[in-house]
View 1 (cartoon, rainbow, N blue to C red):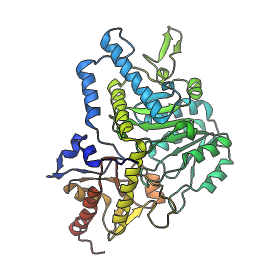
View 2 (tube, rainbow, N blue to C red):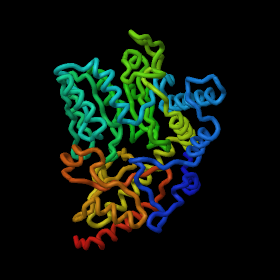
View 3 (spheres, rainbow, N blue to C red):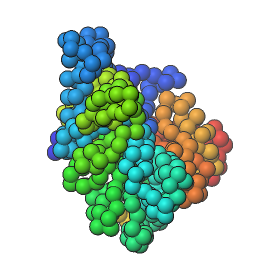
View 4 (tube, rainbow, N blue to C red):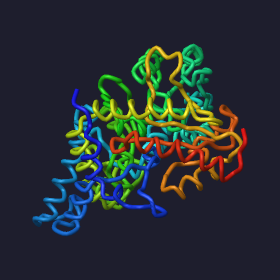
Length: 417
């Protein structure tokens, strides 16, 4: 299998040649947002410079060109995740917006009093709060599948909870805190057998590994463009066409209609009936360029590269004095099934202090609860954790810089443990 030429790849990302606090930027926060290659930046710039126009509204040349480019980006997304058609690709603001769309449309009409929605203990707030709000409106309840001590889903607990016939199972494909890669195909299979619909939060999987919605057979999947080399402000909701057809629109206005009278309206065809108002055209064009880039690299190569980086990071951090790692470790594993996310703490140091001191070394990591307070505060029993996350442009030398800088944290904070 061809490997990623990291040094060549890094030249495609202008920000990686910049400095922070007088030192070369070491960007280790791609789980929050990825950096953008020149091709994506140029595609957006070219749109604004040469064919900026509203889509679906003009018969003049640049409007037609913008409409074609926007639609082409949806076709690229559909092919990227192996959807049947771009009709199954709805553009939203982000993953959060995509999940809320399902909650406000499909779930609003299909979840009632006494019904159950299942999630897991490792969910991002985006896959907890919409269901809590829905449960309050409908008199339903949200229950959570437990995690085992090895930071994986307790499948026995899941099977037991399925006996209550939940209406929806909404779960993360990859934990943004633990890096755990859940068996989406098996979870979906069991859900379907129990009569439940499935929604997958794929914000941390689609950008980092091959994902095939037909193979998984989920009903819905949500992810964000800004985490996969694309611009912010554009997310994706994949939905099976039959599901989307039966769902009512959530937002009303221009472009999502077929006809409007003073008494009633009819809706546009898929996927446009869910995309009211002026579209984020530049976002779609940028995401299309990002997918072109990822396709050229190869998602299997991206996954292999991140796996190597994660193994190396865990090895170095496990050897480092006073560091506690959260998530699947290297020891005692039959198979390494972990994404490029490593959360850790330095004993005696608050993660915010760790992040601030590392920033002085030019290192960008995340510190906090990572929009997963129930997991971090209740399950891990920590107020916060530090997190380093990797992508196709990171290299082992950056992990060495991170680990070596931990010594400075200990020195600055006068830690003796």
